[in-house]
Length: 376
Image (cartoon, rainbow, N blue to C red; front, side, top):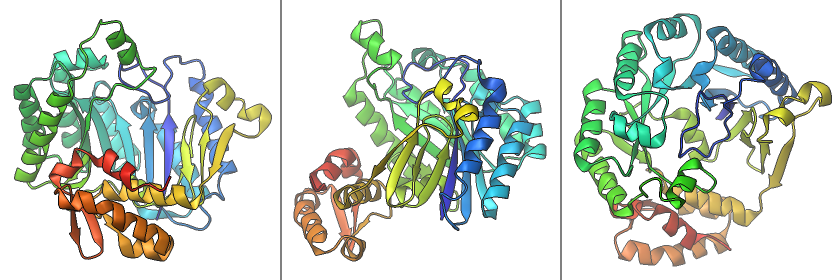
């Protein structure tokens, strides 16, 4: 199973917490898709003969693309790669872009069959803190419009741990989500990344810092409510009804291969990882140079083991010691079994046969548990 990720870097404004590569300037907007198609052609052999099962438009703000641009990109992929006729095709979208006309046209004129709507919160004070481009009423309307247009495979993003987000309003956010009957939720703790506007504003005491205890309370409530409403917690930050798991993100979590195109996009083929330059000017020079600027890293056996442990423990599929033995050998399996014992004993990890998964208590410590199992 393989996927293709398309990074659309353009945004109307930069969210305070965002550390993805984005640009506000529209200087290269007109020629961008042309260069993107050139890169796809250059990378046509990257996935070998593997069938492409997912196409994902991320960003940035992919909903800024015109329908004909989306179609051009998808048509190019279908020409260059073997694509499953039932491929999952996801478009990330901001609520302020999703009016009735846009959604009707998207549904009727493009092959996009899954929407990822960046709501983040249904409360204006949170959206102001995050510096989102939309407001609460636009968030609600975007979901209503998406459902009315006939999109049934929808995921919504919600952020918890925002200093302005009370427990009462977090409950309300979840209630509104459940009321819409949307089949998938991605929910993340607000993280203050270095070199973001939020990091700078908090350092200057112009914004309230994140309270870790508040975030833990929100996370515990999230687990409680999603379970109550029948959602499967299949990855630390992702919840879905049966049959609505994100096929594209599952490729990342299950060690599948993927090609990333666009500035800053990452690719992985099982042996090495490579990533494009995070610079629009350099990326757009493809026309003159005939190649995109990228960096490449061949993964060592230790790195591949560490990645498997880190990603598998985040999922409901868990870490399988039979897989460890078959792929990495006895040394790595024994290392894992030795270092997992304390976490099983204190109830953070549970074992069923060969498979180890995090308990709800362990999910709060996912990164630390994985790090303790790494080969260094």
